[in-house]
Image (cartoon, rainbow, N blue to C red):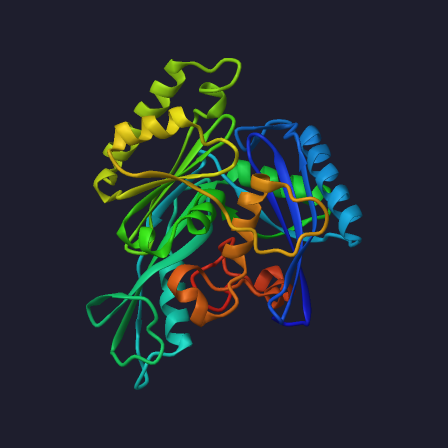
Length: 366
């Protein structure tokens, strides 16, 4: 890290709550949570802003509460997002290897090629994660640094989102004087936090049940292959309007989406992210539907706590922190992207490439 201590703020925008967390980390590897808050998502519906003024007030309350607890002024944050407006796909970038072995600049050039693509009008590239490298046709390379070769391919999993909901989030953040360091898809962050390396290699489906939506992410061969958000959630099963029909509809929708995408056969294990929503009926239903082992996945809390623990409400925020703050290339290549270093925030907008974030296990492109 650039300094002895660093402050990291993350904000999760979900359809049940807006949650925020402030963490102080240092070069000794000690991370301490300074603040945590949760607010009703007034002005939001299913992760999308429907009233700018109400959404601004909601986010303002989160910011003021975090600042009061942590004793700092918050100027930037990583924003966790989810919703049907997010889509993902595989890309590919190629670079010729000029020297005797692969160096970081070769990886950088390949990744720049991978994101230099045309996406549909009205959409923005918001996140990317490397799945594998290919050297002279040899697939499945996780860390190509120092290897010989003449051609380096990189295969990233890129996430793009509809410009309208993303622009609305940015405008609300600007209103409360928060600049966005990056967007992180909550489903992918949670998947990496609750699934083991072995499960991600063999094939795992991670479900995140929120009040009004259910997010799915599938990892196979160590990388993401599928993500989707369904417009049915825990309220449709257990809420006041919940019913057995809600359970049937949710399970049917999960099965239909997996079959249509052709990814059902990749799943060996199902993990439900533990955010107080795991119930016996859901577990039994998933086991019967997918005929695979189903377990409850908890996010381990790595922080020295200040004050009372908030339990599972921290799950997504911790996952966002873990995904966004890999300590080094060596430790991040196996499981997660490289850190988006703070020094990148000093660049002017003219110097930034036309993408919103770049988490491809490489030096920051933003």
